[in-house]
Image (tube, rainbow, N blue to C red; front, side):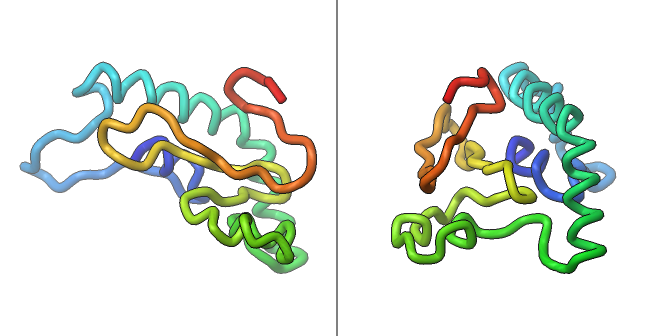
Length: 119
């Protein structure tokens, strides 16, 4: 959940007073994943700021479905657990407990991993 939340336009973790702690540091594996996702978010802050400014001044959305890149691509319509952030970042987070990886669909074009810069 934190890996996905790091790429929402408003990212935060919160809890109710007296509830079971849910901060990422409670679980070492979650802490490592949170550190990586939030570190990438910090690196993307100038990009996020620009995406928000563009959406504000020109209209549109900061986050949008993958199919919006290529509406004629039927596979892009099936990409239900990934989205675009601005015009150039595709987010495909781990979404389920125990999941350690994801399979993503990439529309035509050149894409690079934000984690290891591979193509």
